[in-house]
Amino acid sequence: MSLLSIRDLRTEFQSPSGVARAVDGVSFDVAPGEIFGIVGESGCGKSATCRSILRLFGGAQAKVAGGRILLEGAGDLAAMPERELAQVRGRDVAFIFQDPLTALNPTMRIGKQIAEVILRHRKVGRTEARAQALQLLRDVHVTSPERRLDAYPHELSGGLRQRVVIAMALALRPKLIIADEPTTALDVTVQDQILRLLRERRDSLGASIILVTHDLGVVSQICDRMAVMYAGRLVESGRVREVLDAPSHPYTRALLAALPGQTGRDEELTPIEGAPPSLISPPPGCRFAPRCALAQPRCREGGPPPLLSRKGLAAGHLDACILNEAADAAA
Ligand SMILES: Nc1ncnc2c1ncn2[C@@H]1O[C@H](COP(=O)(O)OP(=O)(O)OP(=O)(O)O)[C@@H](O)[C@H]1O
Ligand SMILES: [Mg+2]
Image (tube, rainbow, N blue to C red):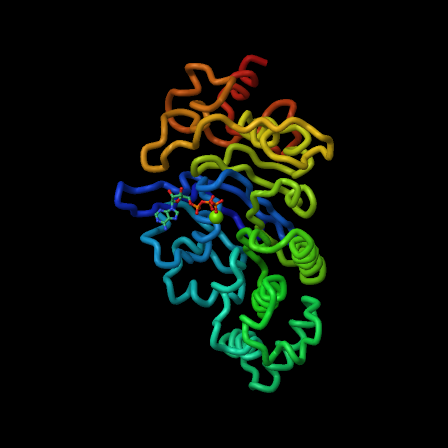
């Protein structure tokens, strides 16, 4: 049973040079209480995927052009009118951005900001909302929480600000928290504390989390399942241990070889040659083929290959490699 079921999601950005298909046929499921990681190189569409769920595109000229975003108990978010979706934001699904400053109002005291979120959605008075804000700060282990209620965002460190943002995200006890690189702007020790905090809140509230990160170490540390994204599509997904221990798509293998800290050994890093393709006019066939050492002529033909289960891989471990498909067919 899934809390969130994304099917064939397509999201387009209008840019001066044309329509960028930032998300181009993405499907995945998130189970209740699960932490789902999304990894991939810069520009592959991780944020676009996350932002599509709540249609939070900032000022960008972007739209969900197709597919379904089924949230348990709420229906298809992709088909929902803006007014209804506004109710889902914060209440059912919360979004944590990379930079906590963008999520906070610089001119409003912390306590008031958290209380506003509660007042907007719940029938409680100001005193009760403030008491709940105080408890939320305690829940995310903010020290001297009474004093912080009256602080402005700029008076807090980056780590504290991100804790406040998480407290705000948790205020309405959402079923799903989307965290788009929530620790990238923080230093390493603080990163660790924030990740532990997210996992702890998942454990105590049973919320699901989608966690976008560049860091496979983070994925291996706190995620249950993961997806690897390349040029607007998923190329592999499955349980974290299975994907990291037995990567099946050549891109996942290349990514693992290019990033430090996977095995704990002093391994040699091999950067992936070349650059990802344009999302305005991607190549036919497998989008990784132009950079793939194993690519065959058939990898460069036809439409982009779908994510499929494979013989020899664990149930639920999927990949989108044309060569693996051919090997399965020959077996
Ligand atoms: N504001 C924008 N205007 C136009 N196109 C955009 C905009 N934001 C994203 N895109 C397009 O969408 C693609 C995916 O962007 P996205 O931000 O989802 O990447 P990402 O995987 O989150 O990268 P990063 O790891 O750097 O955060 C980009 O490559 C670009 O083509
Ligand atoms: Mg991003």
